[in-house]
Length: 309
Image (tube, rainbow, N blue to C red; front, top):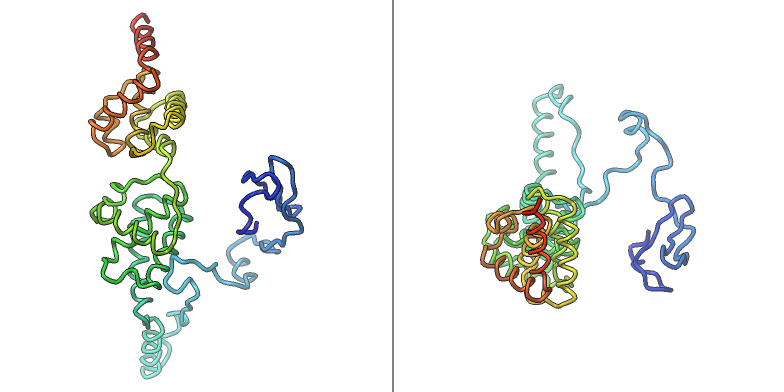
């Protein structure tokens, strides 16, 4: 699928289907064929074991921003036959090998250290490869534009990771990234705003709904409670209760209300610890939801039903 096609030119829908057998991109909403006769870039041969794969493969691994040389670097020979050489030739080989691995420019040296740190933090946060790749691309662009100068490498890595998480709608809070990287969350926030502004990266506000599945899994709640929490959040968004408020706080409060309605009680302290907010925040958002969405009667009814049972 072409990376430039993001929506249907007829109806504007982003609900597209890629049919690899026919080489077509089709809009699922209106049926318009956006692109046809697409080229299949996948391999045209099969492999049944690693040995066959090595023999038939004509290229190396794909390019990636997670390596300082984009994955295009080569390695000088193997070590198995080195010790059969004479002493002089062996020393020459090791000297050449050392110069071959030596990173030449300051940018490459910076990237080699920073991308190793990025991989460590990404692994700690259990982020998908797409997020790690995007974060590495953002950091590489920041280095090439000279935005790292005067800032710690770790804070720029953390800011790039947070920006990548926001772009891919993978919910990770500043507190989580701060814990993983060891950098103060205020510093990460400043660096994140700086690099996104300088690189012209447009990021939409976080959607509180994205945080609900993680909180539900941590609190071991039922799917019914998760669905109810999402419904409450959607009502809150229509009533404009989410604007100007932290997404984790409003998500945690809606989940707390859902637990009361579905009789899966969790304390405000338990929900606050999972969401990374204070009990006061949950209490304030909880009161707003009850007042504006008129949920008090529903909670009271559910509690009476539970007592009767």
